[in-house]
Image 1: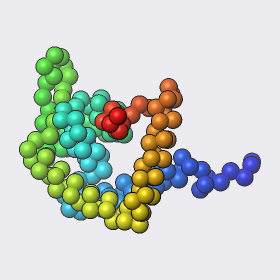
Image 2: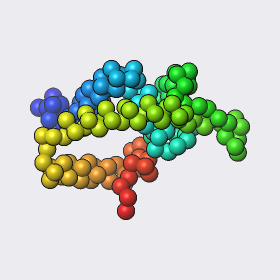
Image 3: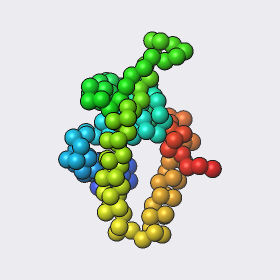
Length: 159
């Protein structure tokens, strides 16, 4: 075998960093509100798009469909989301935040943005802009790759 160094492999390093950040952030909103990582992702996605199907949440929140279904059921039981039949096709269900869900998410977003501030405080404004620019360049490579998962239009910068 050649001298492949996994710890220097960019996809691995990005995955590890992303997972560490996600898990640490999950501790913050888990402690303050008892919300799990999948619940956070569903709530945030619903806040962005107002209403979504399980498939749409699966596609854009980086969660498998069974996990989305279980998470939505738990959030519905907690009174944070509601399910309503699709107007065009009653077999489909649309999920949206309740007023309570919007309130809880607003509180969690405060916790999350405070965490983000602590995380990026080690970067200068120029470094942060460079980091975000590099991330966008990497997204662009994947956007042009027909085999890569598509990213939500909500995750693309405004032109």
